[in-house]
Length: 283
Image 1 (cartoon, rainbow, N blue to C red):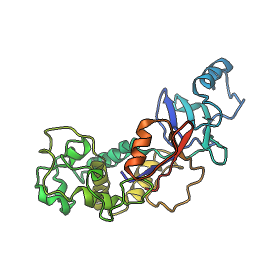
Image 2 (cartoon, rainbow, N blue to C red):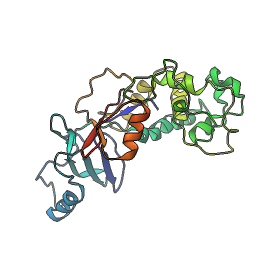
Image 3 (cartoon, helix red, strand yellow):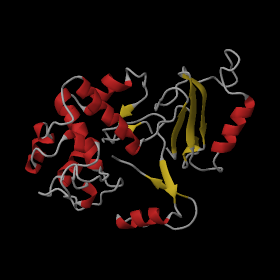
Image 4 (cartoon, helix red, strand yellow):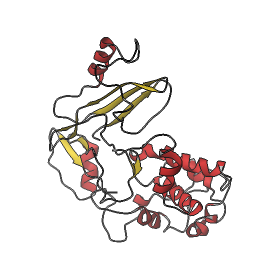
């Protein structure tokens, strides 16, 4: 999907004993340090010490924002590690994390809302809303996008029009990725016959939401999902130039062979060794 912000270093982890939340933890909802409204309202010192031992990363490294929810209330909220290694900015409960593919569940929720509104159906042909896929016929349905069984080619398997790599160092838009993925005239396999994880499926789902709702995906998500759920610090990051307060930078281990290989494939040479490689995401 179009990149969803919240935004880190490693990530945001929320343990929901009764409920789920994926927004920065506001000062109004998180337990103030050292304050207890009534016995058992927050964690005791032994429990908090156990969490600190579990999540505290090595010095000067990326980390996590951790929250614990019980009975729809935050009983613990704390940041561990750094959100930005260059400037030594720590992760706090207000740090904004880039959720990447974890955001697909929100795209699916948008589709579910349109189904509940009786505006679309899982059995609808994708071409009904996106004429550019009509060359694949009516056999390609919304359900195939949702359940990763479309047979569509992944955009990263196709060359970019300008010859640049499909990598976050080289800015590209959702629509550019869709155009590349739809270039082949034949699907990889008949829809519904196989499962294959493809980001393009959820990119197309965001376009369907826009066509049906007559508004941008970000606007739809804000009004129908984020505001009703009280996720007032959550947003769809569909503008790479936008300033996002408390944004965390992403990192990967410089010694990870997969990191070196992916950089090399994109023509980016990094120095091997210990430490962290900064991952710049411009999508």
